[in-house]
Length: 318
Length: 318
Image: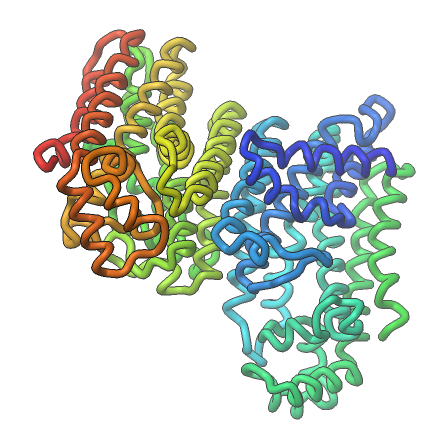
């Protein structure tokens, strides 16, 4: 995977290049700050489930497809940071903080357009898939906004929102891998379902970390989502458990610093983080099972291992 | 064209539909406020230059392609309005004013994604073309921003900016018409060049109107671009003519109300609007000439007539 990772990095930088130097600088700003590149590496691993007739991993269309997915992710982060008025991202100044909202919106649009261009180079199916996925990401974000500060938000609503805003792009990352490697349809469906479940686990773990990790680890105050009124799974489970009534009394609107500290303490001490982590574990197990239609290989092991690894950061904290 | 127009309207509304009612409402908000639909009607007219073997205008892929282009236009307006903090657009409340910046950015992204999805349904070439065009629109906007409040902005810089931010989408509108109607390559290139020149004329005329039209006609204060530091062709020509020195003394930064009124009077009384209108006339004439490789037909007449019509609004004002 190290070789694939290097190719992904190189192709990302190439994708940000344009005849306009200011745009190139803005478009490459966040990718130059590093990142785990989970999505493109999943694309490469998904493609590598192909048998010996397929090209070597990281050699061509798999990287192109993975980079397209990563560009969507990066472009949406540009827009998220404008929306959140975020000043930093990945320990560097955010694009909006450095160049203003206007340029950050345009640079985000540019990255999304470049993603679509790469997808088009892989054929209609990938182009249509990536475009539909961008639409789903937007819908998931809007769905989340609709429930802001609603303490009676249902778990089903939470799950639908994260499926749209997060899991759909992971599903597409894996699906593109299957498509470019010309896998049989049942295997492409299996890879897609793996990606979706991986994405669900990823977001639930991220939401658990938002309440159990330290401010330093997060690079932002713990409980940030809760303070913003986004009541995610650990919070919803805490609302339903012991201490839920007191928590319900605190939430439902913007929090004072004291109320924020108290609400965070209730969630941390309650059953929410453990229950949410167990749910994430369920998604990880289902993700591994989803790979059943695919002949076992180092690539399927890598995929299942990557899903299992999602739990490493939270398992010993809750 | 009336039938084609109805089909465009219907397909636009269909394109905004999604399982998420709030997103559908936001995505269809601006299209429901009406619009001239110049871009999709150019796509339909360009496709109609095909001989008798082609499908009837407005019957299929031409409308799909035109709608994709119009969705790009609409999506970019959503983002422009966030950027400009505009409160109205086409005499209705802007999306950002009604639903906030956050949702306006997401709804704009959604429209761009739907555009890419429609483009993908027309094949790789159209998908790649539309994606590349979105990138060019963003670059044109960034280029314009780089020259804000610069009184020594060159005409070449102005022309490069409007080619990117405006003409490239008109060129693509016409090119898609040629592609979906399966025209020979030289005719596709001719249609593309026609669209580019049409777009140049369109933007120059728009910029002339910005200074010569009344506040009421514009729905915003005349000289808005100048006040925002975007020195367009009539202003640049005025700077180079009689009264240019006084104008240069006023511009270069934000204007007081008095300075804005005086600067606008200088531009209106100077040679700028007439010189810019003459330039627009040159583009219109070149656009008609660009159609030379295409056998004359009612469709080529309609295209040339549409370009000529651009001048109708300004010819008697300067």
